[in-house]
Structure formats: structure tokens, C-alpha cells
Image (cartoon, rainbow over all chains, first blue to last red; front, side, top):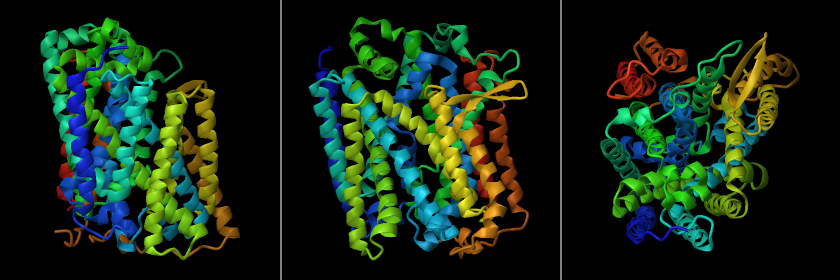
Length: 515
Length: 66
């Protein structure tokens, strides 16, 4: 095992100490009554354009992204760059659809996507499906944040899987759980500011310093073998890598804002204008993600996995160790500590928001809807606080006792599952033409076929769809969503005959309301 | 600002957003090494450029539909 890097560890610990204080202090920031669920779980919907920018940016671009996307570039090359078109495409969607959703949720006091679905369609079972899908898709995502944290702890020399590494992970986790419990969404919002600034510094510094050290981008790209440098050009009766690249980008973009943590981030904005402005401002993070992806190629060009001092790290974390190794190799220890803190804190921000989002869903759409309809505001908020602990604890147990490969596979499935709520939430923001029971049937078909496609491909995201003698390798989430929509459309006239239509609580003007 | 009545025809601006979709989803257009710029293959710098173009278009649509 490599030795402990004391300087990096001390810098890391100091920054972690600072955000711990910040997380607790955040309870008093824009003070509200934390015994109300929308105060604890949405920060009182008080965040303006700038804080929303930090919060949503810190929420969507997670630590695991910063580790795994460059790792994919390191291992597989060009295909990893799909993250860039993916994060380009989320913003037109954010600009067009989500101001409507923000407005209607603000008007009716909806805290979750499932709240909206029950108000819009009046069908508690469809809302339950949306809530359960959200919770189940979120849990492996939280677990992956802990994987990101583990890799960084390994980079500090504390050992990823030994007792010292596990102890560090547990300490970080307890800090996270405690400030989330006490401050709610205000904690990750405050910490996101620190995290995002650190990440920007790291990404820009790395992309300035490394090409200079190596002797220009030309040298870096010259070291990448031709088959990794760009996508394989398809031959014969297949759309090949082109189709998988495009469908991965589009499918991931459509799925992203359906995740409960994205919804929580958006709904916590103080105005419709703040959501709209962020659609134009958030792409700054996409540029940074592109730079970080290039780090994977730089690590490859430097042959970082061949260096003896990183052998243990690569053995423990495989290509996920590429970014930490590159940072250790390039920068003085103190700056590596800053960079690791950026990634480590970058794990806590989304993990906090995800656990809050899952807790909101459970409390609002399962506990209050099905078990305790008379719950007081205080009971509701208390339930959510406990639930946020349970969700995170589950993720911790998962990471400590099961191979991280399972978390990665479940997260892939999570993307396929969450996109099945698109008809209810995204299309629901425009029309309630689709019958809720037909949507429920489509949802079930989408979940089943999507899961089957992923499992049949041994948990690879792309499925080789065969049609008319051609093969279309593409993202299973998009294919299963298409099937979901077909089922929902076909069954809608049928269900409209046999079921009576529930009232719509929302009105067309609600979707345009500025506040 | 937010309370201003929407002008009819304003919504056509949203069609501009299709640029991002076409520009990123038509992969054969940019899957090449040449033209290299500052040592960076086209595949990489084009997509990074699209981040800026996408943000610019989104900003234009934001102001046009405000």
C-alpha cells in the first residue's frame, strides 16, 4: 500500500472541517422553521439565481461523474465524451419544460414530482409508481457518491478497502448525515458554493498545467491510439457507435431532470426566472466536465497506470484511480489535497440532496398518502429527517459490504427506471391526454423491458436493437421509453372507456405563473 | 419583468433550441480527427465549442421569450 500523503491529508481534513462547520451553520441561513417540510426539504424555496446555480451545478455534476467519466475516457477513449453532448442537451429541456413545472409546483405547494402527478392526474397509484421509482433510482446513486469518496480516500494513501479507509468513509458519512439532518437543503446549498469553486480551480489548473508539462495538447492526443481517439466508424448493416453515442447523450439528458435530486434543486429556486436564467448559466459546468474528461486522456497519454507508486491504487480502484493518480503525479501535495477535497466534498453535496429528495418522496407520497394521512407538518418534517438518515445508511452498508460493481450496475438500471416517469412528469406538464392507468401500464412495460435489455447485455447500457435487417445499438433507457409511450398511447382510449376521469387540480394559468 | 404579457409569436424562438439537438446528435458530422486545432482533434474541440454555442442560444431564447 502507498504511504499516507500527510500534507494532502491535512489540507483535505482542514477543508472538510470547514464545510462541516458550514453545514451546521447553514441551518440559520435565510432562517425558516425547519419543522416544515418545504423549509427543511426545499430550503424554503428561497434560493435566487446565483445560489441555484451553485446548488444545481453541485447537485448534477457529482463526484462520481468527476471520477468515472475521465476513467471511461482513460479506459475507452472518445466514447466517454458523450457526457458533453449529454450535458449540452439538458439545458434546452430545462429552459422549456421546467419553468412550467416550477410554476405549478410553487402555486400548489408541491414538493416532489409525485405530488405534481397526483394533483394533475388524481391517481395515487401512478404517483406511488413515480415516488418508488424515484427512491429506488436514487439509492444506488448515493452509493456511487460514496464510491467516489472511497477513491479519493485511497488517493490520500489511507487505503480504499482497509480498515483505515473504511473508518474515513464512515467519518465522512456521519458528518454528512448529521448536517443534512439538522440543516436540510440549506446545508448542501451552502457547501455547494465551496465545492464548486474548488472544482473549477482544480479543472482549470489541471488543464493548464498538464499540457504544458507534457508539451502541448498535440503530444497528448498523439499518444492516444487511433481506435480510441474518435468513435469507430460503422461498417455494414449497423448504425454502430454513432447511434449508441447519440442515444446515450439524449437518453441521459431526458432522464436527468426526472431524478428526484434534480427536481429538488429546481423546486428550491425562489422564482421562475431563476430557473430560466440557470438554463443559460449552468452550461459553464458542462465545459468544466469536458475539461475533466480530457484529464482521462492525459492520464492515458502519461501512462499513469504504469507508474509503480500508483500500482496499488489501480489494483484497488481500476481506472477510477486515473484522476487521483494524475493529480498526485502532477501537483504538489497541498494542491492534490485541495483537489481531493473538491471531489470528496463533491460527493457530499449530491449525496445530501439525493437523500433529502428521497426522504421528501417517501414522506409526502408514501407515508402521508398511504399510512398517516393526518400527519401534522411537524410529524411530516420529522419523518423526512429520519428517512434521510435511513436512505444514506442503506447506501453506506451497501458500499461497505458489497462489491462496488453492484452499485454501478444498479445506477445504470436507475437511469433506465427513472426515464419511465417521463410521460407522467414531462408530458404531464403539457397535457393530461394520457390516461393515468395507461401510463401505469406503460411504466410497468418500460421498467420490465429496460431491465431485461440491460441484464441481457450484462449491464452494458447499450442494446443492439434489430429492425429490418439493421442493427441499432442504442441506450436501453430510450428504447424502453419508446415502448412505454406506445403502450400508454394505445391503452389510453381503452382505459378512458372503463375508468372515470379524476379531476385536475391544476389550471393552464398555473403553468405560466411567475410566482 | 416576469409579469409582462407574452407577446404572441414569441414561442417561435424556442425552435432555435433545435440547433443543439441537431448539432450534437448527428454524430457522423463531427466524428473526425481533422481539422485539428491547437493539437486538439475536431471531435473534441467541436463538442466543447457546442457547449458555448448551446449556452449562447439558450441565452438568446431566454431574452427573446422573457
